[in-house]
Length: 187
Image (cartoon, rainbow, N blue to C red; front, side):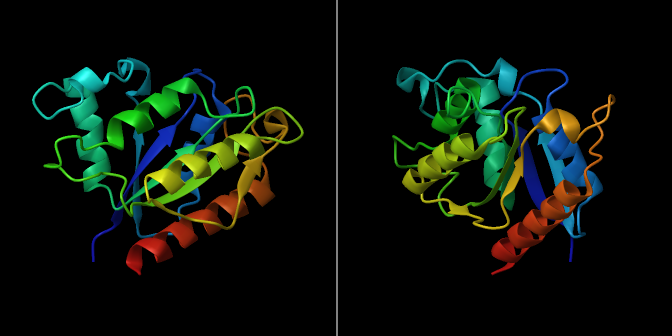
C-alpha cells in the first residue's frame, strides 16, 4: 500500500512562522504511512471573487489548489491566531476550495479528513483560531479530527533559532494527531 497523501497548509505567510515550522515538524514526527506535502502558494492566491469561481473562469493558482485538495487523502492545517480567529489568507483559500456553484465539479472539502493544529506566542496559543476553523469546517461538512489538540502556546519557547521543534510534548501531540488523521482516512 502506498503512503496516504496529506496536503499541509500553514495559515501564516511569515518567513519564520512557527505554524510552518509545525508542518515541518509533522514531516519529522510522521508516524509512517503519510506523504506530507507542504503547500506554499497561499500568498499568491487572489482574493475570493464569486464572479470568477467557475470551472472556466477560475484563476489557475486557485484551480491548482482545488486539484491538490481533491487529490489529497487528507489535509493538515496549522493556523496562527489573529484577532481571536484565523488569518484572512487562510479563510480566503478555504472560500476558494469550498464551492461548486455550477454543481458539476463536486466539493473538494466535503467529507475530507482534516487535522488542525496551531502555534501562537500567547498563553492561549491558537485556541480561538482553531475553534473558528472548526466552525468553518462544520459548514463544509469536512471530517475534522477532534483529538488530540495541538496548541503550541508560547510558541517561541518550543522552537530553536532555526525553527526546529524542541518541545517533546508538542512533538508527541503532533505524532498523535497524524495517527488520528491516518485512522480517520482509513475508516
